[in-house]
Length: 128
Picture: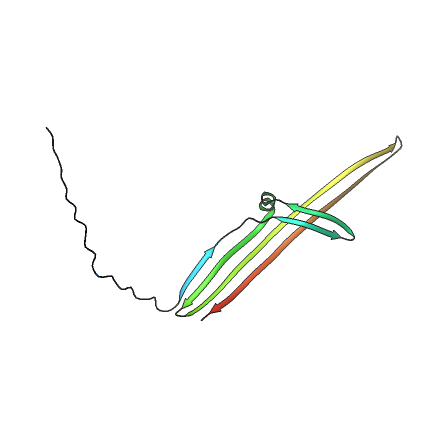
């Protein structure tokens, strides 16, 4: 036994466009976002220079806290906005080496270095 179903679909005729009222009062937008940083450059501490090169993976491993967001408030033709970026990165390292000059004379030297980067970037503005 075979059963056949036949359906006829008529396209709906579009009606007149609906008018949407503009929002009244203040409207707000909050957008968090992110990007991947790296640190590269030269530094001098007490007359000694050294290079700093941190890849994005190393920066993310050392990242203590980060915040990035865009805020916007709008009321009619008035728009207020701000963009806030904060990051806190801490990194450090140490070394130790030994040297034997003779069977009776040897020495060990070591050192440690740490760096804390904290920065803010805040932008704000408005349009009318």
